[in-house]
Picture 1 (spheres, rainbow, N blue to C red):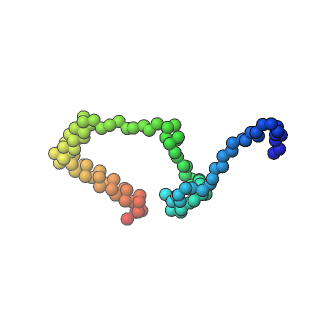
Picture 2 (picture 1 turned 30 degrees about the vertical axis):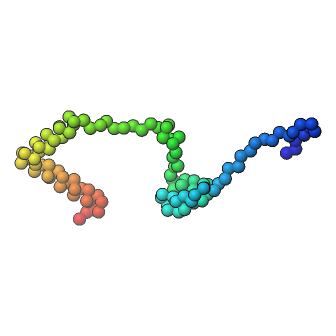
Picture 3 (picture 1 turned 90 degrees about the vertical axis):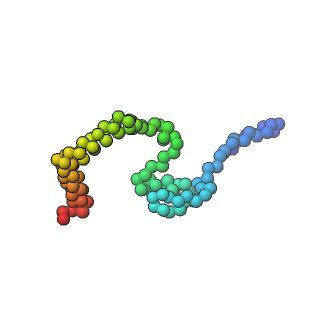
Length: 114
């Protein structure tokens, strides 16, 4: 690009910036375990894995929703239910049967039929 220069003035310099692709320190990928020195290769491999690089700007767009804290009343209610189950033999046996059935169902789903 050509620029005309007046002889009695200094030429204007347009500032420019050079962005490097090299990382200041090698970065180990948390999923595939490879070490990268190039930002572009790191981003490309992360996208190939179907992942997204999230920085602080993403966190500010989606404020974190905290669940309600457990109250003392909820704890006391759970304790009363547990005591009621274990103090009555019929309820205790029913609870044991439900737990055993749930365990067998989970086992069959994970490992197939016995």
